[in-house]
Length: 509
Image (cartoon, rainbow, N blue to C red; front, side):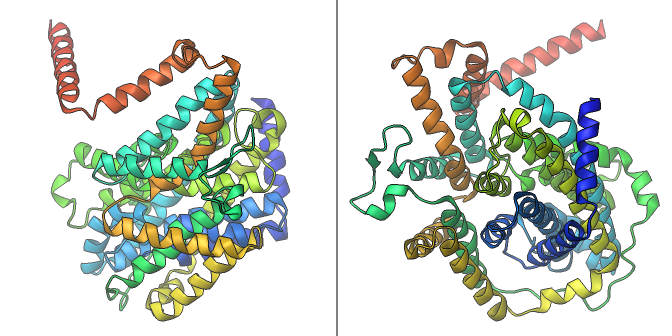
């Protein structure tokens, strides 16, 4: 514990300089601006900034990316409140009560509540990040190829089953991402796989061009294909948070923080599910249920606390297990790898200081978010009025430069365009894109873990099911899959209801 506090102190001391503070303010501002532009996402922002910060020192680059990540999720609440359009998917739950408050002339108060919930939720997540990451990393040191295979498979399964309304479509997109990672030379024998005779594909589908295409060019096409809405920005009341709101709903804030971190840790679930889960839990426990959807302070507070708490929550498994909790944290993890930091169980052995550096970075990002939330609300609202005809060409140029910058190959630009168009068509057919990205990131871990495990056992699959931790992970994965079979689901729910009734009967006696 004391060693951790010393390392954390060193991390904060290292960032208390002019350059890190300027990076914090600049990157958080970029994130807030991207969040204020309906249709753009945190994943797009991080992917583009990864290409632009490739030459910076690792700590500076990761600081910029984390600040942009936090800023984007927070900035999306602005359009949710003023346009009834979530700036990012994570802010969809904030539309229900935020826009209703704005229509009542309380847009400023709504933004103050969103700021309060975002800051408190993020700080709660930072505390969990500092406490849970080292512990989880130590536990994961006992993991081998067998356990990481099931972890990666569970991540894709979870992302596919929770993202969107059709589990089958989610799983199909996850499997498509897994297949994309198999293109190119395999990591053990260097044999070409699925290259179709194209030498450019021998190196595989590069992660950054694929991510920029899926969440950059695809976003551009999606935004341009949808009509615009006019913002309610004519009059904004005071944006200063009311202390009375914080104390009145402290139970809601605490509950939403716990839910946000928990959902963030689950592989592939993401900030949007954290916001909806927090909102639903707050509504069930609320004494003001009739206000929800009509301008509930509590509902807006719960949604914004939950989605921001899930940001550090999603970073926890990315650092400790190399299993990202969401699509943005997947890109963030890829950026860490590009900068020479390999997340996973060995991180606490090889780079223990880096974990606490990330804690300090996330704290600085939260403070930057608080600064902009309190003092620059009205100037930032101007970005909502910028025509898409100006914003979208700029984003397209950044996508093109970002795809080209990693390896200086024109082929990567074509790859980015092809993946972007394909993802746009799939999105219009209601296929979720997040499982595809998680499949891309986790596919390499799954492929190598499976092949290494088979090499260790000379092709014997038994250890995948007989080692204690591996057997537990396999059981959880297979049980989760079985729950989507209607007869199994009904049977399990029936057994669970009977067990609860029996427990109530015993307690009643």
